[in-house]
Amino acid sequence: MKTILIPVDFSFTSANALQYIADASEDIDIERIILLKTHYISVYTHIIPSSEYGQSNAELVMEERQEIEDHLRATGQELLKKCKPGVHVEVAVSDLPILRAIHDMIKDYQPQLLLLGSDSAGYDSHIGEYVIEITQISSVPVLIIPTISRYQKLDSILVPCDFNAIARLTLLQKLHKIQLMLNPALTILNVGPFDQHSAKEGFHKALLKEQLGDFKYKLYYSEEKNIAKGILNFARQNEEIQLIVALPGKHSFFYKLTHRSITEAIALNTQIPVLILKESQT
Image 1 (tube, one colour):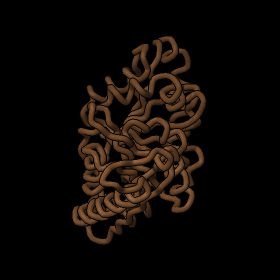
Image 2: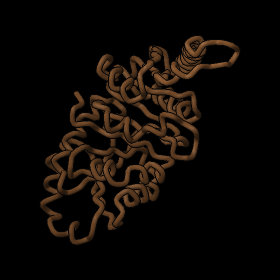
Image 3: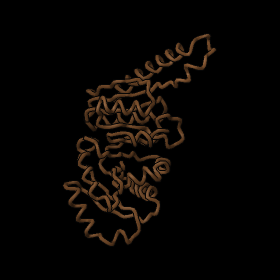
Image 4: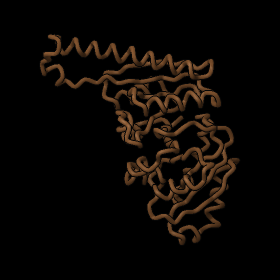
């Protein structure tokens, strides 16, 4: 993997995401990590006068930006010490709003992965508050790290699959480009009523075999009515699961979670990282 982009906000949530990738660097090939911190100041800040220490708002803004830059450089140095030799850590401060800043960084630096800390345990994280929106605007895969999640070598991953979107499973071949894992065992999970499982079971199994190629996999079913709960409950009951992979597309679980219950899913998911693949990734 050449480049990973990580937006940070100096919270515990961000610190945990950085620790996760530092630990992961021992197992995966990372060349460059870019830490991004936004320093967006509303135009109204310059209009409203400040009486603090007799300084102008412009002076205060410059001081604050310098403090952020110093803190970010220190954070980058600490991360560099934790990563294996050969990893380069760069820092960037943007004056744009968070979504625009991330969009532009992806466009300019073309990272292979965007890493986000998920504030699912009540920690105060600015980035954590925008996980859904950031995921939606990203054109590259997004790896979401829950606050209390710790890195484990990725050998077993869960892939929720709607039988109407089996063709999307070809996107899993792109895991080789992200290089988060080598030859993982896939657990394919379909959540839905029993009659949907059994009606075309033979046909669906044949399609799975065709789409997954040389991946090792097993197929499981859940009759949980709430898709998010069905996925997360299955993952909790199978402790070997170290990652949940979500696929894009109108009929996929990614679409359903994004537009119906992703907030609930993130709130419920306190331990297992989620990798969201993107149709446009290269």
